[in-house]
Picture 1: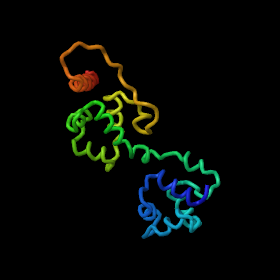
Picture 2: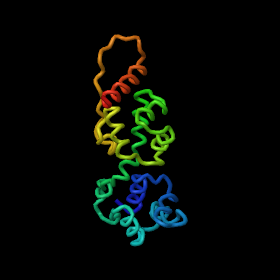
Picture 3: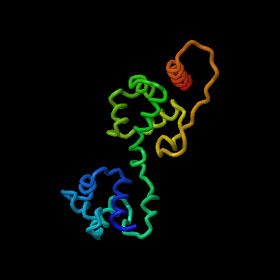
Picture 4: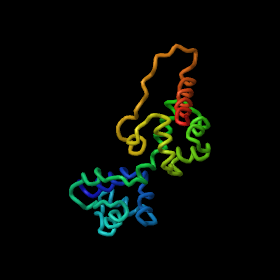
Length: 178
């Protein structure tokens, strides 16, 4: 794999959508250096390789590309995407922002910031999400393995699916306080 392919793959893997965004993270004012590397007209310099190693703990000049793919996430990086999974939980349970924030005992504004990725969850919030919605911490934090889902009980009620899910969540919360 050449430098152009490596750098572009690395940039995209770590969520930098534009060359400018990546260049700024590396301390450059413009994207021209990154653009020149990605289009093959310039190799990765020692300075850039050093900066990438400093910021991401990756040796981009290493011949074995797999080290880029197998880089371990820091805890901060892992929980930075928890909002995506929280949003998925909300949609699957057909809950409003108010309903889910009440279940998690947080403000609606705090919930919105978690979903948007503007804030990271506290440990007790992560535990509340896992317990209230019966999902594994592996899935919630690392997005690994499928979430644990409760088996559907065969019930004969006139309640809608949304009402049943909401009542199950309330019941689960009530059981904890008993």
